[in-house]
Image (cartoon, rainbow, N blue to C red; front, top):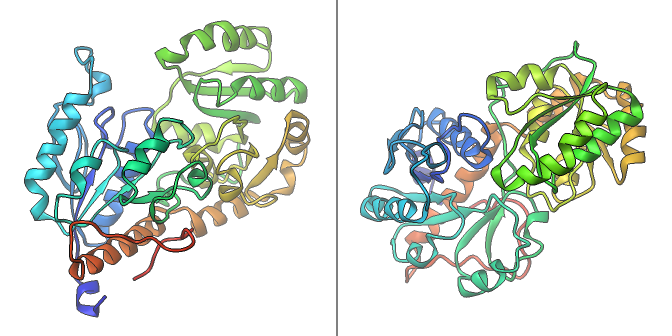
Length: 376
């Protein structure tokens, strides 16, 4: 790409899901990442427009087709129509942008190649679901970005642009080198794949208090009632259920913890809470699943374990990890500034490829799948 093209600000559209606002009021990983990316791109001088719910808050331009996040509207039963409306607004305004960045999985696939504008889609969720294989076989040319290398493994051959690990603003969650809480933390969502039961067992075996700050979706209500609530009651001397917390509460909750427990039992695509803990200078004890080995530096930002016995042993070794080192590694690897730079490299690559293409699709297939962002 020419130096002149690299120096000019890009006109970028960010297309967010409508379930939550940008950023979300409480739980909502994808919308939170879209917000962090957008704000950093604006800070770096780019012209950014966010397509999101009307209650979103951003320093970029905001285009909305709904007044509020769909999850907060009790009258909404089916979200499909609202996302079709969103795509129609994107189609109508596509000519205004240099590049369009989708964060809505797959609904845009049939019309994305007709936009005439470079585009890419970051896949934020799990990709090991059987229905996704035939879909991506039908659309193998869509330019895709993974959020970890492990996330890619179940996929058929597709058009990977690169892997961009998440990042958050360096000032969002200040590091706490002298925690006051003396407890273990579990933060996220109550669900079988997150394994809060493992966290409770670790607390029970170590005798160290556990605080659980988690959202309970309706789909997981039975799991809570039948499995987790009885365990909380049984181990009430060491376990406290805090409930869902917001970003302002996270700094204190994570910063005052001895460690974050991340006892997952599924192919986690990324695990945003791990870097949130690291930003607070709090080490992470995580089970070896999904993206964990790509995010946690074993013996530096936490410990990667294979079972409850290993997690219990790791709790006893937390004093070996200087919290200043945890925060320093976060700053080196997981800031929003680094994430935005990686995405801008992909945007520039697509814009440059678009200048030389002869059809409506940018194909970037290579003999081996790239595992890091492509640099033009």
